[in-house]
Image (cartoon, rainbow over all chains, first blue to last red; front, side, top):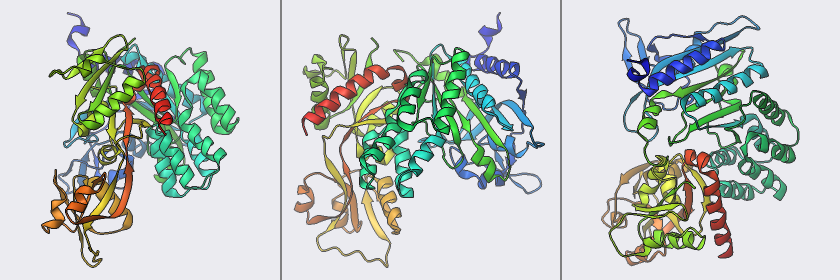
Length: 310
Length: 211
């Protein structure tokens, strides 16, 4: 009997992803199932859900069943200046998914790059995200956004903090009519409104979206970062299936720069999520940069059963 | 061409919205036939329609059983489904409002008792005002709550205001205007984007014509 007949699609994908990350110089990071609750209590809004399974261990310490992998990796990573740590993991986490009443065990594979993260490393991580989608399915789409460009655009006009938050929410829902209405209520000029709405209006295949971005936002630092990333992906022949799209949701308090979400045909939600999270490290008083992503393997069982025309 | 699965809200709003889809060139004649069928398809146009309970449309779309759908802004605000909201169809217009018995005066020394079907909308509205409230979640006939002393006020959808008037109630604050919205599943938008965009652009032209 072949190994392919024994393992589930989820297990096979996990093996292929681990091979991909190891071949690219990432080393396996194995961690404990438990972590001190304090780590999550002080960074609750970084987590997808604030609800955590806790228990008291034999020494009386309040512990948690891991709801997240990234925080543990950062906490346990010590770096000397100029060093970069490249790790991958395959772990189970425990959390309450959005709009669900109960805890679930979620299998997650992913990688993290922490330390001296260069533009080349950022490109490498996005490439690996795109290749991870290809390992899952023949048709995947990676939406790439840039939180630096969104932040800069919203900061360049006079908007209240609440309006900025609502515009970002509307942007994540591709709700251009709401963005326009908020801009008008806040008294922005027609050209300022047009530029803000452009964040929602410009999206599509990476190669096509860059000229449109340059036209509206000029060749600024953030647009150039996206342009360089797209040029790199082109060289690697990976632009097919990579979109520029500023509707990628995420917590702007932790993420910055390049952020992305990956979708595969037949599954209703994203199966891959990642980006640069330098702001989280600043909050944790670590003076380094970081980028990483997670692939949600448990979603893949739906891919096996997804019938019809997905 | 791949089929677009479309969830429409059962009832008057759904029929109105279907007429808009029909006018936009995405008709499915079998939907007009009188029978008990639940799913209607027109392979020529690449569309498959189905009627679902209005409050469930967003769930069908979020979970990918429908690629696109039409849901009231009230449902989107209440349940915050993870979907794209691509267009305001400018139909099914009404407002989310706070209503109370005629002559009601809010006593700020007391917790305000609020009866509603829209607990999240009510919570977020009063939390933005810093007002302490006690939510009484009801599933229907909300207007009766202040009359029987179950609550001080209600948070509900007001269309013409006739039901309120006939029960000696009146709107005391408006929370947000409501209308029907065109929503899409995020993943479907990646893989059927061209078809969805064609539909959105035809519907947009229609809503602008009717302005």
